[in-house]
Image (cartoon, rainbow, N blue to C red; front, side, top):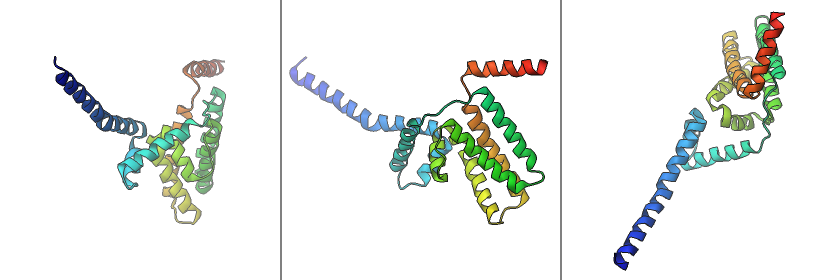
Length: 197
């Protein structure tokens, strides 16, 4: 093979590599972000000036999220939260507005125990979007209804809807924040032993 042919081959390979870097890499990044953020990816893109800016923001959320010391919940903490949630739901019949406020507070407490920051609604949305993007819209809707309730613009049916939305996020936070499988299995066994007695 002549020197010219070798140089031509090397240049062709370099061109292909450059194309891969500038075309394939962003496509792979886009797919990864879409898979990770689900509907939140589409929301970020629609609320941004450009897809690139939205993807940069989502990548920044991932980076901020990685800096938190998120902890799984112990089986006893999970059980305690479940009991508290059952109490909040039972309170809804007699006092829907108080139950909604308690649901919001319980979700915030659960976030704090897991290690999420809890100061500021927008900051909460941003950080939750990394692991809980699929239930984030429930949180937005519940929060919106809760704010309308504070100014007297939410019906009892709205409050019931908010309760359902809070429950979705609560369940996601509780289940995705569970202790490793070994600990969950031990907790199941312990609960079974208590009920068998």
